Image (cartoon, rainbow, N blue to C red; front, side):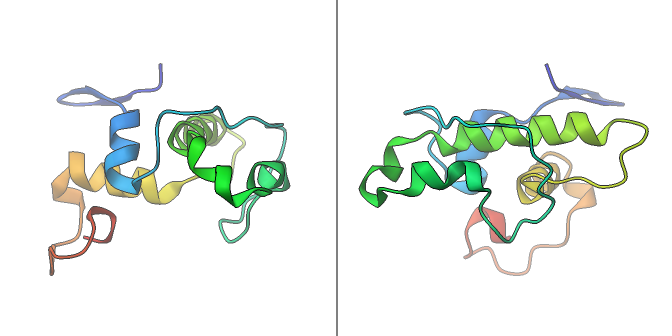
Length: 119
């Protein structure tokens, strides 16, 4: 289990958090593919997902939230190694989750009319 050990207890990012923060589906068909890559850029889609994106009418059937959470956990594991110098993965999820769970580290909200991830 991947948890954060804080002075006031343990906490972890859940599928419910992914659905609430990013609005991604957390049930449905599994998103599968090779996980042996080191793509560090968040501006492109990794080639392993291209077959799943081939038919746009079927995209909604996949559990993208589960894939996002699994990718983030794997990225956190890699980043915890002593020789790691950078991290990839859905860092927006990690950042917004931390702001929600630990509001003292987050920015002051200016306008609450935006979606949760934009606050």
